[in-house]
Length: 416
Ligand code: IMP
Image 1 (spheres, rainbow, N blue to C red):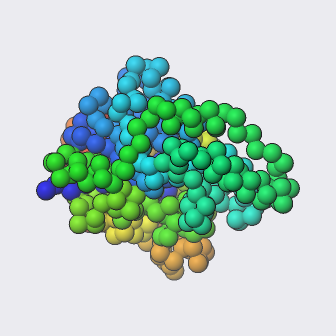
Image 2 (cartoon, rainbow, N blue to C red):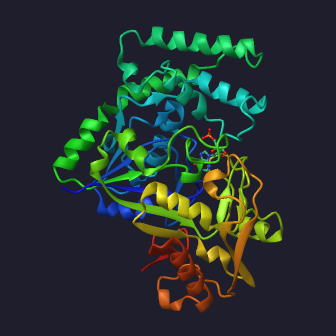
Image 3 (spheres, protein in one colour):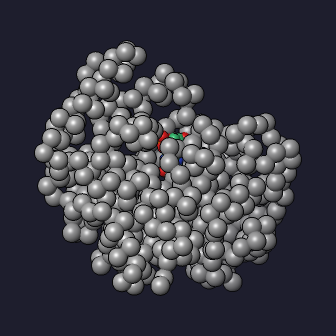
C-alpha cells in the first residue's frame, strides 16, 4: 500500500508551498490540509489569475482532485465562504470537491477579538500574530472549550454557541477590550457552511481512500520554524507544523507516511516578531523584499528578509524526515555581486535559539550572478555561480534538490 505523502515548509512559512502543491496535485487524487487555519496564505498563479487560499487545500484549482480539511485545522466560516465565492466566480467547482472534518474546531468571532487583545496588549509578549484567532481557538481546543464543525449540526447549537460567546465576552469585558461581539456575519456564514458543505469523519475517509489505492498528499501550512514545540517559542504559531502533525491532523498512522517533500526559499523570510539570526537589515534585505515581493499574503505586512540559514534548514530536515528538497525563488537573487549562506551558528544552534537569542552566524560567501533567470526550465542554462550556490546547499543539507522554482507561474521551474 502506498503512503500519504507530505509537503511542508522548512522555514518560517511563505516558502511557496501553494505553487508546489498545485504543481504536484496532478499526481494525486486527494489533497488534505492537516493544521493551521486562515493564518496561511497559499498563492497559486495560473495564467493571469492569482488565487490566495487560506483554508482550502491547494488542489482545488485542479479538476478531479478531492480536497480535505482535516481535524486539526481551525476553520473560520466567514473566511471560508469568501474563499469559496472567489473561486466559484472564476468558474471553479468547489462545494462538491471539498470535504470538511467534523472534528475541526471553529474559529468564533470571540477568538478573533481575544487574539487582537493578546497582540495589542502584549499579553503574550507580542508574537505578531495574524489576528485571525488562531491562538485562542487552539487554546480553547486544548482547554476543551472548543466548538467543532460537527456541532453546527447539533439541535442545541445555538445554546452551545451562546455559552462560548458568553465566556469570551466575560474575558473581553474583564480586560476592558470589548463590550460586545459582532457576530451577525459569522452566524450567517456558519449556517451556510452547515447547509452547503459536506462534513465527514475525515480520518475514516482518508484511511479508506488509502486502502483503496488513492494517492494522497498532505499539505502543511506555516513552516517548521513556526512549530509550537520546535520553533522559536513563543514567537511561533499554535499548531505543530512538522510531518508528525499530518498523523494527528488527519488520523493516519505514522506507518502510513510516504514521501516527505520539504519546500524552502533560496533565502530566508519571516513575518512577525522573533529571532532571525541571518536577517539583513540593510539594502540587500530591502532588495530581496522588493524583488521577491516579500509582503504577507494574509496580512500585507512587509516580510523580514535575510540569507539562507543552513543551521535552521538542517534542523527542519531532521525533524521532518525530508526525502526531497524543493527550492523556491532563486530568480530573486540575480543581480548581486556576492551571496552568503549561513552555515552554522558560532555559539548556539537553532534548537537552542528560543533560550539564547544572542547568536552570531558563520557565513560562507559565494559569488553572485547578474543574469536574470526568471522562467528558466533548463538546469544547464543557469549561470555557473547559481549552479554552485545550489550544489553548495545540497552538500550542506545532505539531500538532493529535485525542483528549482524560477518564477511564480506553474511552468517556471527546473526538475533535476
Ligand atoms: P498566528 O499563527 O496568527 O498566531 O501567528 C503567529 C506567528 O506565526 C506570527 O509571527 C505570524 O506572522 C506567523 N505566521 C502564521 N501563519 C503564517 C503563515 O502562513 N506564513 C508566515 N507566517 C505565519
